[in-house]
Length: 340
Image (cartoon, rainbow, N blue to C red; front, side, top):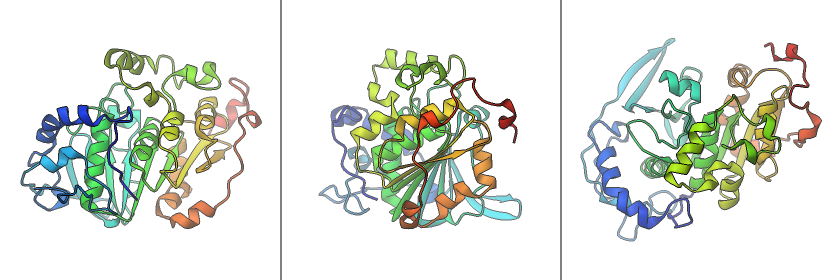
């Protein structure tokens, strides 16, 4: 995975990034943070600014961080599985594993409101290094950052670049469910990770951006908070659409695999929004619901197959082309199909 230098492309202005970097560096460079790195931080790059991972470049802000990192690793016993865990920020948790493959797992709205982490128990047997992230309780889809760690999407991206640079994995995988799927897609393409696996992802934050505006909201008013947030902050409207983010960062991700439910118009509408890109594979389940599909894909092994499988092999696996018109329209499906 290559992490390129930041460019003033509208998503992250280098000038604005430098203006805020001191405050950001001071906030994240606390002794309680980054125990999982087991190292002291001085300069994270050479004088040429080269990122230690595949000659990519390190964001300027991290070159200025000088702090001693303390180990805050805890031991968590869960169903007879001993895991070394570091809950280094309110919204961030690292589980120690094979650092050659980093898996970042973004939590959904429900988990974030409950201050839980999606997938924590379900991935307890995975050997990879795992980073769990959740956002705040409001419907801002990670645009308010990760509690205790970052304040917006750009700062979260910077933090992830830093983690990748320190761990230096050969493969980086992002995954998420619902709003966590949105974060995985956006941040995954901003960073250029190797592969992304999402379940019932949210791919746009304004119902009018979807092909079916009447069936594009997960629930009434879900986009109210994010609409007001973008109006008040003047953030780049490209963030409202995963399609626009992918177009802005082409050929950065080798594989984006999404799973949706045939009986959920919302799932189908959001899947259609990104299905046309050549690196996107779409798997459609005939039964289930938006809120239950993640559990189904974990129970049948589908999601873990993607996270654990060899990437070259995964890319060769075939999926039926996704055609939205092959599935029922809003309100035109059998309620019995929702029962799982």
